[in-house]
Length: 108
Image (cartoon, rainbow, N blue to C red; front, top):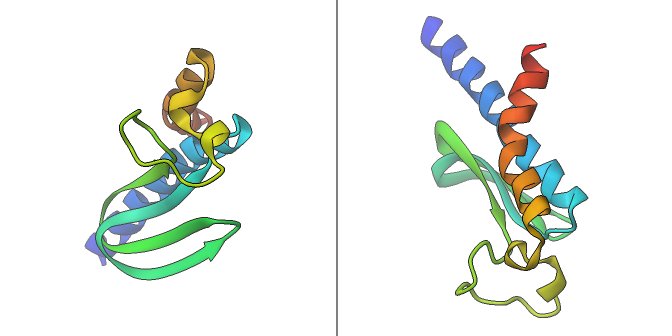
């Protein structure tokens, strides 16, 4: 039971952290390709408004896949203006630090 509760607590912390990145990216006009809790094999997946939401097998982390995080990544048709790489430095900083900021709000 203790292990299950620890996994649930970790999943909540991961969700809060990744939600910070996700909401900041959306607010800054960046296209989010995938929002995932966990790594590895995808157990559950749903696509909504072009974003794939996933629950994966290894619950030790998560990630938000932003469109063109780096310059050399492939461009999706018509999403040039929604690429992370093309955003201003202040918007990039907001998106990157949002995970930690959400942890602070969650703690309060």
